[in-house]
Length: 225
Image (cartoon, rainbow, N blue to C red):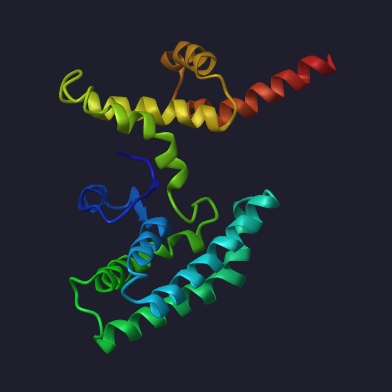
């Protein structure tokens, strides 16, 4: 692979292996929703400590809610996160490190597991702070793939050994179209017609985002004519 991209995910080991196989082209970002869920599960055991961590995570999410309300772009999101979210992130890190050093919670307890999970993934949980294109969690993706996840047992042996990767590519393209208000059928019909004649220099113009901009520009030009 010769592309550079970020995969936002939980701590499932396969993602780390995939990134290591593609060093320099794939980066990982952690998901705060997964980390937060473990502290919710630990509230009964450690109400005060887990509650504090959850409040701090809630502050991170409030910053993101404000950014969404103002429809902030990547540059502004990165700037606001640097000014507001980084100090919250550091506060959470210091608290977790203190709790770990204190040794009050056994590793196999719910709070012990929550602390270990968060600390082990803390660098990845901070990736979104330095990249305005990355979300605080991957809930948008998980919600989008829910129909696929529900049906995957029925489709387990569909196609050959490469079918999974090809399906993932198609799902990604279609969902990218939907998020941008593009009719996937119109996009695929046009792009698959143009792709055989595309070069390495202009193939980037065929991504859903750039395709949508091109269509909007053509429509504007037609209306102005």
